[in-house]
Image 1 (cartoon, rainbow, N blue to C red):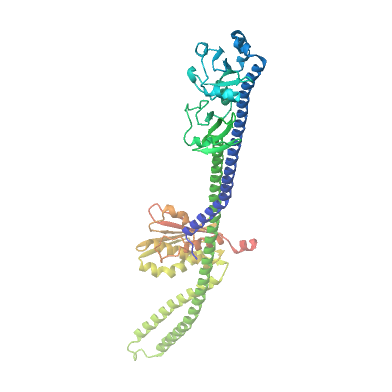
Image 2: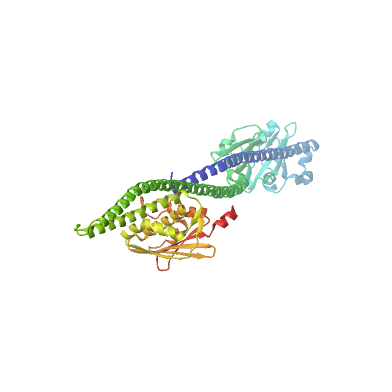
Amino acid sequence: MKKNSSYYSRIKKRFSITFILIALLPLLMISWSSSQFYQNSYLTDTTNGLKRIAVDRTEVINLFINDQKILLLQLIQLYSYNDFSNQDELDRIFSAVSKGGIVDLGVIDAAGKHVTYVGPYRQKLIDKNYADAEWFQEVMVNGSHISDIFLGFRGVPHLVVAVSDPLKKWVLRATINSELLNGFLQSAKIGEKGDAFIVNRTGKLQTPDRFNTDSLTEDEKKLLGYHTGSEVTEINNFIYVTNWLKDGDWLLLIKLETKSVFEVFYHARNMDLFTLLGASLMIIAASIVIIRHMVNKIEVADRERAGIDSQMLQVEKMASLGRMAAGVAHEVNNPLQLITDQSGWIGELLDEEDPEKLMHLSEYRKSIAKIKLHVSRASCVTHRLLGFSRKIEAEKESVNINLLIEEVISFIENSAMNSDITINKYLQNDIPTIMTDGAQIQQVILNILNNSMDAISKHGTIDITSKVDGQNILVDFGDTGPGINPEIMDNIFDPFFTTKEPGKGTGLGLSISYNITQSLGGLIEVRNKKNGGAIFTLKLPIIKLCNLGLKK
């Protein structure tokens, strides 16, 4: 079956796609699953890290606030109300404890009056009454109070720690610098796009956030539900880690943009994707090159096999034609021989007749001569057929290339004459005989001449030249046709390649001729003439019988 180039193109595409899919699909699946695994692992590691930060900062802040409360309780145990009521003694006590973050220190009696005070707001706070303040009432009932962070009349964020004596007769009150809490939160390395802050139960910020907001958003307020331990929540592309502190009065929020969590991961993933892309391109390129090479080899093998099959078919046809020609020649030779004998016998009888009694003796003799002439012509044809059949069945024999050319011309001269094509012969007279397969060389010459006649079509000339060139015999076949397009010059000997219209050529003649010539140790070359037309050169080695014996 003849297979055109589109068939092999489809094979290349299918093989390439299959090979690429087989190579890339597992690679892509492994890459995708690895990416998902590492993404989840990275998110888990990040949230665990944020949890550790939240727990650490919760413990530090709780410890700091409790330390302030314990410090005040220890001062109440160490000093009496009279000591704290003495301004000089209170100043001395304050100077000893102010380095721990205490901004001011004051004593309030059971009636809520600010008895003594040390700090930057003495004029405003001395003699101030806190009897109606909620924090004072809480201290007198529970024994202690830790406020939220607020501005108050001072205009700066601060929180108050107050404790009462065991008998609830007076209160020691201290203001704590909230900047210490801010420092605790800022020291947590959350990243450039991370944030950590504290809110109270109503969602009001106790420490400033990076965006200087006053309270939580509606979505963030959903985080205010009480829970134990650390809790991770994702809201609007942000990861929140929350931890309650200060006995559930404050909520520590650590906030981190989800995109920033994966920045390092995305960078690593992009590098992996770039590497994967490079590997994929290499696989695709290698697949295409390998598949093209393999399919091209298959295509060449198929064409060679098709050429060999066609050549064998042609040989079988020629052998059948030779046998048929031999049979026809034998069948025709018998009646021709009888006609020759009878015409000769008639001539002998006429010689014995009296010329005066035969009115048309000369006409009889002319008719006998014409009969003998045409019988001789018919005999020549049958002898050519017999010679052709013998050459087909032969293998190596001593061959005169000029005689082969003459015989082939005798087969096509009528066709050439009908097309007004003149065949000129320039044959070297003393050309040596060579040992070769005459029948196959005759087929090569016939194919070349038929190709030249098809190229000329009508009104042209074919020049045949034979000569000796060193150890080779060269036979040139030059025609006056349009010549050969240089773009297809390298393809004219390919099997099934033809420039003729569909149905007028198989594309096998020159291919078979090329293979025959190569098998006999020769070569066929083609080139265009300067003034138009093409020249086919048949090159055959001069091999004599003695040389053939030495080779054997």
